[in-house]
Image (cartoon, rainbow, N blue to C red; front, side, top):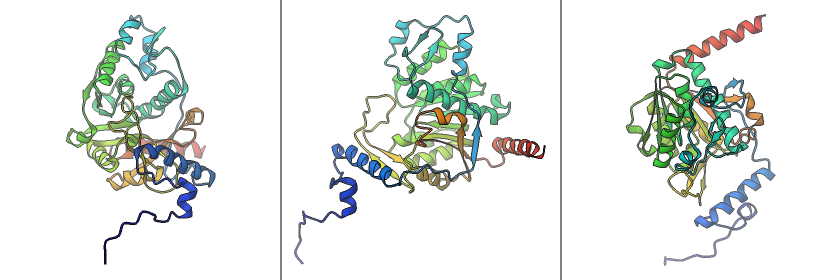
Length: 332
């Protein structure tokens, strides 16, 4: 049989309807192809908000970071605008009384990150139950360290922020010094090498999973690096299948992006299945009461998970106290 070259293969109706005949192989085609799928999913009831896990319901308020509040009530001299500008551009709004890094508040920046701190970092401190000084924290992809600083402000004994970009680390160290926060250090590293690090009691990973091209390897390393529990906060697509969308044309010049212009965006089910697949036996979804007023969380596109590694550790002790408290309330 002779070799053939076929260039006019048929395109089925499903592909025509969703992707408008675009094969989506070139980087320049990916954005429009992905957008076409998302629009089709929304129009065809293929984009529901699902809740498939036991939940931890956390009362939340969108308030300043703990260290911002402490600073505002202190007599510490704030950094000058020139000192702040020398480390710019800043992609997080941090405030020192009348001085700030970006001089404006907006929902995507100010509100989302402070909601995260209240719902996630403060929850970890609650679970620690006064044992913070005995526990270590690893903040994976810490950017300029806003959550590392929140953990340290709660009194965790050892807090390490890990980030790829030196410009982010310079900002983080500046903030730790400006806010007078001890017990936190920042290190440069690629999460591809995360499995080589020592374990931490609590691992926090916010805003990273959807930036990588090796999601299952990352989840495996997060599992191996965790002693007690992992808190994972990530963008998810709601499409009801377990998988990852290929996203291209990312601007890697922006310091909150990953290292490549392409990445895998997980679905909600993909994250859940991935966490169980790598070894976590208990996975909960964290739902803060303030989510309904916070962009991306209220639409179910940003989701927060707590995955337990040590089934007999501090999480189980905390959960037992919560169960007993709930039982007492229901019996009255």
